[in-house]
Length: 403
Ligand code: IMP
Image 1 (tube, rainbow, N blue to C red):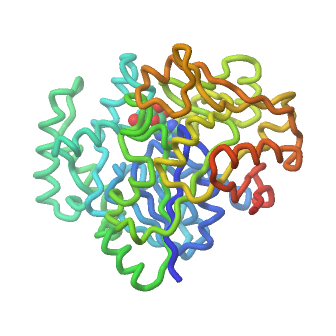
Image 2 (image 1 turned 135 degrees about the vertical axis):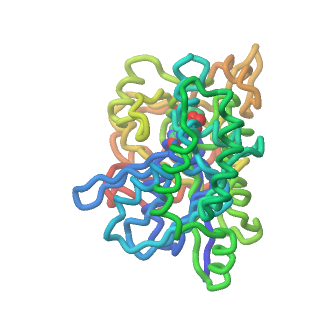
């Protein structure tokens, strides 16, 4: 029986989705990314070797899997070609939707310049927002254009001219065109209609895992706008990003970390800027996989999580990195916010309001192992009304329990 699952992050990204998707991928034939691009990053350790992937879906290293890069993504060809080198010798297939947009060299430059000017949101500098901007302005270049030199030239010309008002250095059109043409030779055969591919796969009874990148609170509409990424990170994004009918999705899996982290700017009600915060960061190794930036850290926020469970329609939860909380004298979770003397129990739509809330905490005595965390875990389940089916409390595969 085919099964279709969507796995998404419920916080500000870096919930450990990659590890969980990799863990679950044994049950699926196809793993499909539906949004974002090289701003994501996950590290896999196999046989003493470390692999870092940005655009390639999780689980391909297992062999015998098909990866999909969906229409909702923005793809950086240069970076993709590099990533795929890590998969040399592995048996896999990759289908890149011809509708996916390309991140062009000048997008990255504009992103970096915006960050350097101090007017950015603390982006990953991968040109993500610029590529999506061009897509929605209808000046984008799609992956399918790489299949025909004449069409590529035409589309690139429009994009180049549209972007040239932002250029601060001289960028040679022919040079960019040549780079794209050369690099794309490596991946040309992978470009096709991924939506149709998935339709056929379903007919054949194949199982699909749709893998989200970043997290709910970074969603372009439902996150803490403007401190968000430029795509739909919530489960609905899987449908639009893959051209897939919602009635064929069987379940939504929501992944959250036992505490909270965020990279980049923007409101973060439970943030800890004290020694406890430093300890959490060090113990959790909270440094960006893509940029190496130290992540901001804080306690678990159940107000935000309840909202994320709703907007994604989460069927079951996965809690990661519980072990990072082991050994703290006490552990807190936010159960409500205080705003101008009122109790707030729903995540505010406006970041202006969110930036002014004070979290109301429930404090738990510290714990040193899974057993000791029992009250913490059942409190979260009761509060959210959704079961936590998988708990990960260490790097090794054995440190993942199914409940
Ligand atoms: P962009 O996606 O590079 O435009 O960055 C926009 C915001 O999303 C910034 O705050 C980034 O730090 C954040 N962001 C983007 N990708 C990730 C991710 O994979 N994990 C965590 N934060 C991310």
